[in-house]
Image (tube, rainbow, N blue to C red; front, top):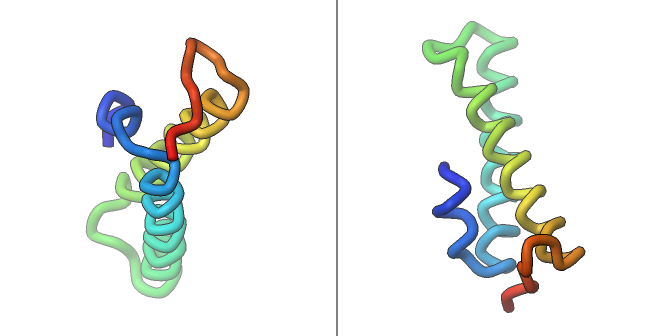
Length: 71
């Protein structure tokens, strides 16, 4: 997911997406350890998505770049 798409979402939506991304990462790692995954790059993509969401939430919390928390 792109940063521009994430920035348009509210904090609650971002937290929901974060929980889903973390669950997906867990599932991908489990599948990978059990029998291999057809798409090994999915783990990296999911990790980057999690990092983007956390970065946007932190920027809003600190008020960086004029970002304010959105409820």
